[in-house]
Image 1 (cartoon, rainbow, N blue to C red):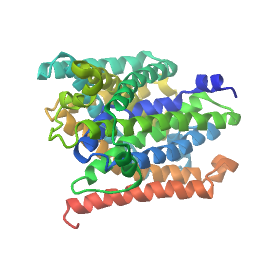
Image 2 (image 1 turned 90 degrees about the vertical axis):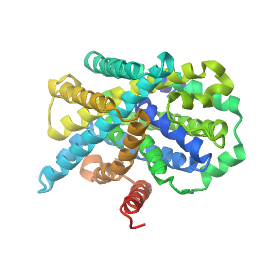
Image 3 (image 1 turned 45 degrees about the vertical axis):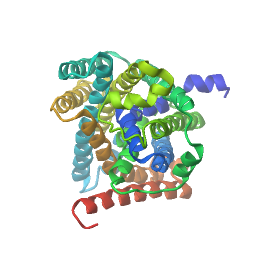
Image 4 (image 1 turned 135 degrees about the vertical axis):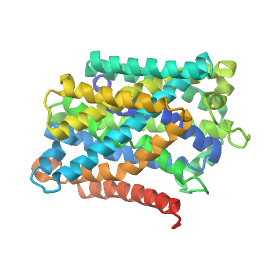
Length: 407
């Protein structure tokens, strides 16, 4: 396949990248760089590799079976006595987790508008309402392809600002390299590590990707294209997260600045954009927030309708009701008065704890010969996938034990 044709075929992988490069990612990466310098870059490298591994499995499952992850889980456990307990666990985890994630997306996009118009509560509340309405409109009126193109354009807008600033800042490349290859967890940084992983390896993307792939491709000969799309888009997305953290490390770490809002985060863009930095960050946050505000309810609706066996896809009334309810609950949470940065970071942390559960279900599906035939997971694939589950589980358990005083 020619390079031009491959570029034209890029789609679902970019949708996944648009989902994880949200305001939560910008916030978590900025806080990691501002508070710990280059020390936690290894967590972002691990998260990027883990995302490629798991999303390739999800995409392969969607292409080969022509079913989403939710549909495959329903078929696998249809005769099991644990069917409904498992389904209820997944549905509650996804619905609650994505509602919290949606609150973070809306809060982040609203922070972007605040950076442009002024950091007042009135601007914040009106912004949450506006972005919620825009996300709902995209989901109600836009076809999958229109949504996909919109999200790709929005994410590219934000990415260019951070890539340009990274070049202008001139980071310490030796410290950057050490941070990438030397796993360390400084005191009080464990929650940030889990948030960095949770903001990149987003559990709901495993449902979203399989469904998006089956909607775009139907021939097994497209598998190489699917894999290229997945690796390229997620690889670029992961690189952007590393650049954001590195830019914050180079421009904020060691200055004593406390990051409490969009204005503080804009400081990292000043070396390139000067007084216009807050406007660049504002546009980036708005773009990232709106893109993720669409993908979270979209993925929740895919997952729940597939698990419950509801037909009709994106055009069904149930699908739209589920998606809109996630936006509504997210908006309500965003308007509670809790600091936006606290909402954003908590949502990433919740995603990090949810990841091992959803990833385990995916691994079970990828080892069913009756589903995938010769395209089931290889031994290496199982080792890599199990490694991701093990590492994220250990990190989550360590934090829980620390919280209850065992560690």
